[in-house]
Length: 147
Length: 138
Image (cartoon, chains in turn red, blue):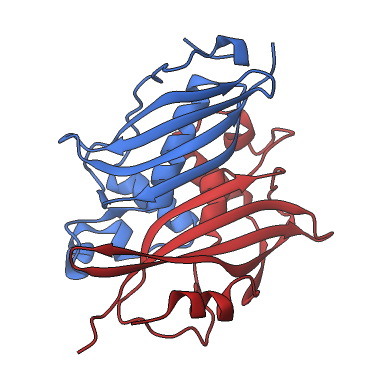
């Protein structure tokens, strides 16, 4: 059985991934409109305050979710949920960087065994390193029982 | 009733129910726009081959539905934080019903807390979560 405290000591709060993005206006529009958005700053690319929806920001966190040396826990990580906190608008064409670290690791005992929850936090910053948004992805892994 | 400022909000108010477009075409367009195009989100048959009951609605699209429901109710508000728990898959071409209730109000800060759910027509919860909305002070 994996020692959660040991995993925390080894992996929490260390940046393991950094990606650069430039958001495409057409993609922002499609995501907003297909989500049922009605506000002009999300569905009108000509609006002075045109910006990405919170849901779009969550999509940036796809790809590599765990540090390359993170131990295999036996199961395939499932997407248990996402959260996003917005501090400033993120615009189409604006260069941004997503920096990822493990924010929390905890477990819950279920009827079918232990589930391990890993919160991967992506901090989205602009070229001046101003924090624009924080996106959390909760990965859920059903631990493989020891033989 | 459309909400314009924090004094318009009452504790326990239920937002108008919102039924978003979950058609396969709409879901596929969302998935492609976020770079997730492929059978899982664009084809019932392709998703079944991957072991799913049908083409999935991405969980983050469910979050998009939640934010849209808030904006329809409070057009002047800004969603500062949203947290969604993906409890069970949403399937394309099946209805999703978005509901929300006001659980806290901070009139001094202009903040509203909401509990939100996405359910199917069997009243089964697919996504639930919370949101924090900032509204203009009166």
